[in-house]
Image 1 (tube, rainbow, N blue to C red):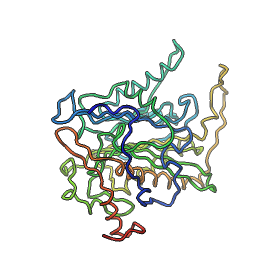
Image 2: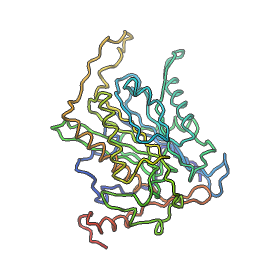
Image 3: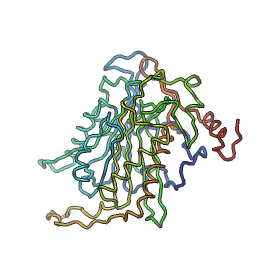
Image 4: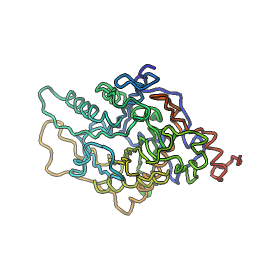
Length: 388
């Protein structure tokens, strides 16, 4: 199979709300995606090539790159940010500078574990080449990873700088392709095919009317713990019915990267607090942040981004910068929005993903929509559908 190109176009699959699975109480944005936060764009490069036995350096290839662009002038505007680690067997570069400075200064990319360095360097190169000749630049990109070696020739190093650049060029607002795309191409989730998922929530006007958007790269969880909107789906669809690609390993492995965006005027410590709540959304779907799991979250806020722009006429910036802060009495709705959007984003990743066969004939099966709806109806969680 050839590389799929950029952006990845696929046969669309239903999302949770298309199936009347309504998670939480909040209202989603128009696209129910991280791109509902104004200025945020997402791009993918998807690499699918080859079949059969693993030949390191040749394939099969089931991988890619996803890039979240937080604003049109990232690195030149105030983008306060915070991060959180639920379990640290993973990588999200640049987090120490976020902890130190409270600022996000680059796009956020996600790929496979062994391609983090390539993608990081590609983002540095993209930043440098967009500057005047001779200008010396400093760049510390944020790049995360999860391990797709179950389906992909991960040691073959198939992700190249041009793939990261292509995802960056393809970044757009509007609906976000999900499932087997970008960095999520070769990922699995709770014993089903996983990958990229996204969702959003808009808080009430009384709390500011702000939007919270989430994008996940889901590659974590065991089948028996999978829960959808409170229903124990993994127990009802066991590996004896739909096989898992990893043959039910006794040690849970896998990771999840969560990117949270909001247009609320949050300060860095508030971004960190919102990022933490992604862990609650993961837990509601059945994740436990196992010993070998990398569960890393970053949250950025665009609510102050126009306040710290350097003077375009070349003068030195002001000594002080005016900053707006959301009153803490109004932050709990953002916590709930981040939690619900994370839960729904994981479910959307499962619903969008399609069955994929990778190296050595290993197959990750999609979560069948009709079977899921039957289970939901059995537990009375699907209005208008009779129990099977």
